[in-house]
Length: 165
Image 1 (tube, rainbow, N blue to C red):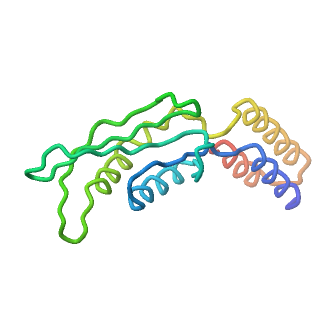
Image 2 (tube, rainbow, N blue to C red; image 1 turned 60 degrees about the horizontal axis):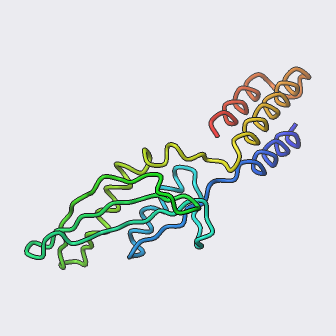
Image 3 (cartoon, rainbow, N blue to C red; image 1 turned 90 degrees about the vertical axis):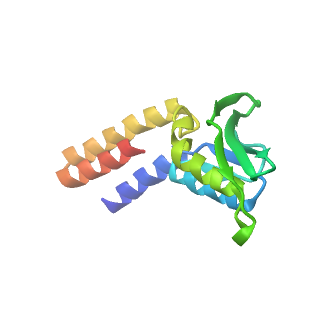
């Protein structure tokens, strides 16, 4: 029974490659914010431009008098077409304690906009492969259940796990 479950897990991993994002930010702290959020949303991070998508943070100073900054994030596909852009976020910069306006802007965009911005992006490279693979895996689980190899609880838990991916 465990061998069959391991085989199912291996097959699922084979067909569920996450889309890769290349992150363009001025500082490593902002990049870390986006890496953490994208990873939690089920995406992979790439260190090369040869990725599925590019996320680019742009910040600019709006006022030199009070050090105000604005910024937004745009997501581009492989051919450079913009597919999503966040609203502009405005934050101030303070030199005390190394405060960085782009880091704070990154946190706000990550928390408030990134999930919605990536909602239209498929989590797998091929939805046909993933959906047909999912149907096959559920059929295999059903056969194991019908044969008495796994219990109803094991079947339901494994099916739920498959459907959540």
